[in-house]
Each structure stands twice: as structure tokens, then as C-alpha cells.
Image (cartoon, rainbow, N blue to C red; front, side):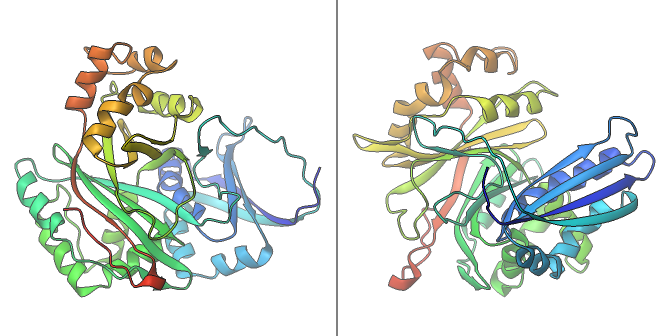
Length: 374
């Protein structure tokens, strides 16, 4: 039992008839953005077992000041609006946490595993997000040229927000964009959208999208953002992120070809599966990994030091093998087998995304640039 201070807000909601799917989709689209807000510790969404239209959201904060600061921002209203559109009645209750009993879990043998939205205990405020969206079939080469020429944004945004790193991948006609930030993601994205050079690049990309955005309509842009947001399933790292520490580091992304409708089952397996052996060895090392999901699109992002091709060859058995390999294989499309060396080799050869660009912010105190590997 602890005397740790805290602030808990309860939202009691009654949904409109038939609005459950709309409500959960809206919650899924915004919860990781809220998780990156300073002072936010976590939340839960619960459904009544007696009256299914009655729902409860519990939101845990470090302090009342943190919650009230967030509640007063335009970002809060923007993120909450799609959820509230599905709600018929609502009320909130607010409490100061006086006592708390928690069960401490042991650290994994290799590296730190953080569940989505949890702040780590070393004070690091980096949050990793991912977006995905389809482009018109046949436009991939043009899309690659546009994205490779993406202008370098300002990394210092102000108000405690900072853009730390970005990576852009292509899988067939799908773009996957991975973003590391400090502070609320909507604030960072709004800052990027206000940059004239970036806006010009986004306008060049827009006609190549399957669902183009209407830049004159803020709701159209917001809807695109919410729809593109991927769920972060699990994140594991060997050491906390340090600005300017990414020299010699790059990213590799792998797609798991899960059967239709089995994306959730695969995500649960990754969330509760074994941790990976992080650290450096020889000339390459796996220093971090994150799994994202968007429907049945399941992607693992690997942060590696050294040559990425050598890293994949060396780390393939650790990343794909292990005790979950057989169970995971059952969730994949027919013909894939992660339980054998041959099957893993084929997976690594055919399911690796194309890296378009990877950029990391340098240490601002040293005046480092935001270099591109493209």
C-alpha cells in the first residue's frame, strides 16, 4: 500500500442505441494520443454487464493540475468530440487518490517492456506512434519520391513538445509512418501542418491517396488522422531514448501476414509474449522494438545499431522464433511457418517493408541537425 498522490476521473456514459462500434472506434483512435499527455498515467474503458449501453471510463492522472490543464486545451475538445457524438448521456466524478495497493511485476530478463501509454519510471517522456494509409495502386514510385523529399521540420515545438524521430515505410500500396515525440501528438501534428514547406509536400501527396484530404476542412484532416492511427501493442527497449544518441541507428519494419480477422489475436499474443534479447553484440544490436496494429495489418518496428541487413540475418531467430512461434504461425495466412529456419528466412526476405526515410533529432544543445538516411 502506498501514499502516492494521484487524481482519478470517472466518466459515466450512456451510449446512443447501436453506437457501440462508433464509440469504440473513436476511443481506439485517440487513446494513445491522450496517453502521451504529461501527467496522464492510464485509463480503462468498461462496459456494464447488466445494461450494455452504460459505459465507464476511468482516467488516472498524476495530479488535478495535470488533468485540468489538459481539459482546458483545444486538443482535448478535438479528441473527445468523436467519442461524445456516440453518447446520449454523461456525467463525471473526480477523486483524489489517498491510498493505492499495487502488485509489483518483475523486470523482464532482457530490456524493458512498456505497455501502451505507460510512462517509464526514469522520467523519459518519449512516446512512439504510427500512422498508416493506402495510396493509389501503381503510384508507389511517385509516393516514394514525394516522401523521400519531405522537408526537415523544426524539432523544437515549444510548450514541452518536441519531435524526436520519424521513419516512413512502404508496404505495397500502404504507407506506414512512425513518429517519436515528446508531448501530445496532436500538438506535434498541428505544428507540422502549419509548416508551409511540409504543407506543400502533403498537398503533392494528397492526389495519390486512396482517400484524399480536404485541406480547407479541418474536420476532414482530423478524420484522416484518426482513421490512420495505429494501435501500439507493446514497446520494448534496451535503454531510455537520449536525444542525439541515434548515431549509427536505423529502423527495420516487418509485416506479419495474419489471416483475415485475426489481427486482434496476434496483437494479444505479442502483448503477453516473451521479451526479446536486446543489447549490442558484434557489429549489430537490437536496441528497441515496437509492435503496431491497424485492423489486420500488424507491423513490428526494430531499432537496430549497425548494418540493418546483417542485423536482420543475425536477429531473425530471436525476433521470430521462441515459444510463441508455433502459436503465431497458426494465425498467419496459409504457407507461412515461423517454427523453422527456412520459414523464418522466407519471412524476413518477403515481409520486410521498404524504408523510404529515417530521421532522428540531434541534441539541440549541440546544434545537431535532423539528418535523413534517404
